[in-house]
Structure formats: structure tokens, C-alpha cells
Length: 232
View 1 (cartoon, rainbow, N blue to C red):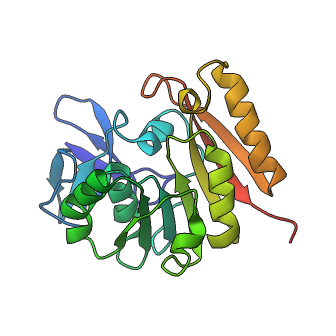
View 2: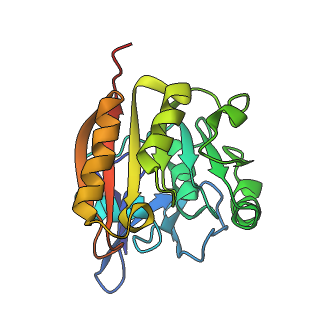
């Protein structure tokens, strides 16, 4: 077995397993604790968590050719749609103790799982029961952030991200938006949905850097990587 850093991505590692197959992983911020049943690997003086691309769209995007992962140690992150913490916990691993992940989740049951499986053992995660469509409701809790990740099943995904970015995202900060075409409009082709959501981002000061299609890990999903550069 061998574990080595992925050169392009801070805090992401390539794992070569005993059978020669490759996986990606993050260094476990809470050693001895898994979050969603992922494999834990002790290597050297650290523990690593295998990052499942079928359970995490960021992992899928990395494996599908994402050029930049704008998450770094010490970053503050706003995570819209944190659910039970599968991907949010890997983001927590990357930003480390000096960073922070503000986890917005609308549904009480997954939020409870997020607390019990991740936040209880990670001081850099804040679980927030709130509706991402109403960012003003948690404006007194969330700080200015370096990065926003949005993975929500809502018809107006890009607009919800824009509304949050205007309040919380630093100028020059980055976003990743997981567009779920079938959550927006089942009657239109996914390519049409992607273009419409990208147009919303561009009209609101975002520079699109990459569009990554996530098949076969997630059907009719695309990951948008963009930087926030509003005129004012």
C-alpha cells in the first residue's frame, strides 16, 4: 500500500491499495472515526479516509478532471446542503483545525446525523438548521468565507448560491455548484439546464473556470467551478 499527496489538490491523497487499485483520500481530522462507513487507513503517523466518488460529488469531480480544488488549510467554507456530512467531513479534513465549515442543512434528520457522526468530533464544523434560500436568517452566525460549496435539490440552485455569495463570499473567493438537472426541470435537456444556471452565475459577477460532468458517478449532474469577481 502507498499513500502520496495529489500534487494539484491541497489535502487530497492518492491511495494505492494492496490489489493495485487507486483511490483518493483525505487525512482524518478525527482519527479512529469514520463518518459514512468509509475505509480508514493507517499509514505512517497519520490516518486517512477513503473518499468515495459515488457518495461525494467533489470526489467525483476530482476523478473526472477537476483542474482546481479551491479549498485550502485555514479556509472558511460555507457548505449549502451539508446533509449527513459525507462530503462536508472531507472538506473539514482539508481546511483543518485553523479553518471552519459552516454547514447549512434544512432537514432535521440528516442534520442530527451530521452532528452525531461528524460535528461531535470535529471542532471546525458548525451545524446550522436553516433554509439556504434565506441566508439572512443565518447572517449573524456565518462569517465571511473563502469558498462556498452548494449541493441542494432546489429548482433555483444557482440563484440560491448567488444570494448567499452576496452576503458571505469574499471578493475573489471561489464556488463550486453541483447542478442537479433533474431537480430543476425534468422536461428539459441537462445541457440546457446547465447553460441557464451558468448564465445566472455570470450575470452576478462569477467567472466560470470549468464545467465538469459527473457521469458515471452521478447521472445528469455537472460541477461548476467559478470565481466571484463582482464589479463592486
